[in-house]
Each structure stands twice: as C-alpha cells, then as structure tokens.
Length: 156
Image (cartoon, rainbow, N blue to C red; front, side):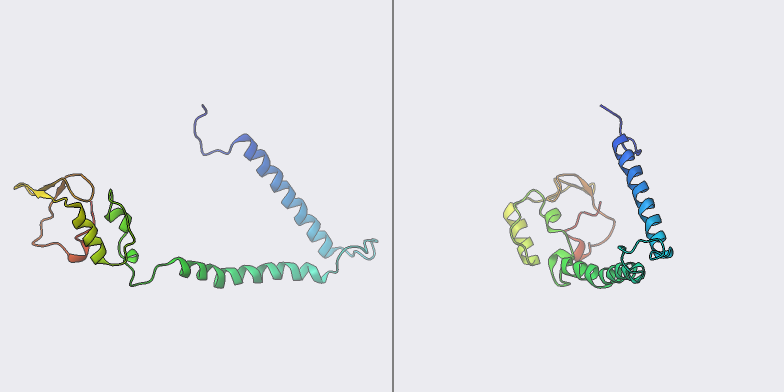
C-alpha cells in the first residue's frame, strides 16, 4: 500500500500538466485572434473582434452577479433563523446517545433529557461521574453557579 504524501499521483500530475498546456495554447490563440488582422490573413470565418472584448466582460459580469447576489442568497437560505434553537446549540451533540426527535424549543430538549432519567453524581472532590451528555468524568468549575445558557453544553 503506498504511503500518503501531499504530492499528486502520477496520473493527476499528467492530467494537470496537459490541462495547463491546453489553457496556455487556448489563451495564445485568443490573443492572436484578438490582435491579428484576420481579414487580411484570409480568416473570414472567425467571429468579429467585438466578441474578443464581449466574452471576457460577460464572464466578469456573471462572476460579479454570482459573487454579490447568488452566493449570499445561498448563504442566507442555509442559515437558521435567529430565534431557532439550532442557531444557539447543536441539538445532535446535546442529545448524544438519545433518539433525536424534532426539537424546536428548549422545553423539548429538557423533556427528552428527563425521559432518559440519567442523573449525574457529584463526589465531594468536585468531580462529576457519569455525565449525562458524554459518559466521561468532569471537574466542576470554580464558580458559585454556572451560566444558565451554558448549562447544557460540554465545554471541555
């Protein structure tokens, strides 16, 4: 079995080099088409020089449209609303090991946690055994009380 290395495989290197040569050749033909007088050379079947400027401008306008309208629209459509529980905490990590139902509020999360009837035992040394969230031992932080919103999160 070959070792993993950051270098490309031989097939990928050959394909990359051939694609590089193709792009350079096409760019040279594009520049020659844009700059040489095609009518005097007898190349009347090539498109007008107008397209030598139009095509790159169309590509740039399309790229700008995608960058300023399409991509932000995709990002906003995939972002949860600000009042959804998924924008605050990942419910699948919170309810690890429990069947995940449709959770839309903190009350649903608390009901699912109560169904499990798993309680944490705290020893006198300040260590919690059998944490209900991850089955590890955790040390209690040196504070009088935990922050209410971080009570359900595993901060280790």
